[in-house]
Image 1 (cartoon, rainbow, N blue to C red):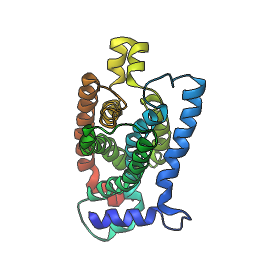
Image 2: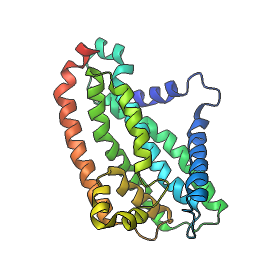
Image 3: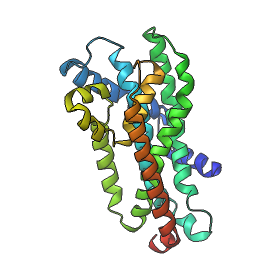
Image 4: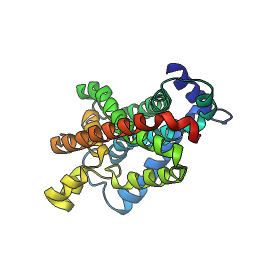
Length: 250
């Protein structure tokens, strides 16, 4: 699996001019847009921690989640020649694609730490919990990733559906705003339904780790974590039930 992961990393940046720097450019541009649109025009930057840090602390786990699903969904199609030549556990391909996105995530984290220093923001011992939150984001992406990977083999429409869903997910996840704002606007029942988004709890915990949130919603983490677990079980079962026919459809 490590060989597949390393190969995916090399292929991703092959024949690009700036290579792995794209892992920094994408969050920088997106945070800039969010800071202008939500921070300045929507007036969400109203006291508290620097709004740029709030957005970036939500953006990084979201991008990791979105990239993991996007990359894993195409893992079977991109390795069609390998599937037809030899047998190996098919699960290794989407897992390798998801692990490859960790490289971009690690590079983006460097940007976050640079901004923490730039804003003279105190670093809390809670930062030690970041590996656990990263693992939570990985598990949140694994279930949907396996599901769309299997569906994409048989129904190629999903190569167009997945980017569309990922784009919508960016705006319905607490990236440009905080979960507390959602709770204020929607009330307790609305917030409970909102937490069905598996990334709500991850982003809540991530912001708590960074220190831009004083506390994380236990309700959000519990509900989002439960949804991630259910999606993981569904994704694994569907993937296992269809993997024998992958070579036939590809």
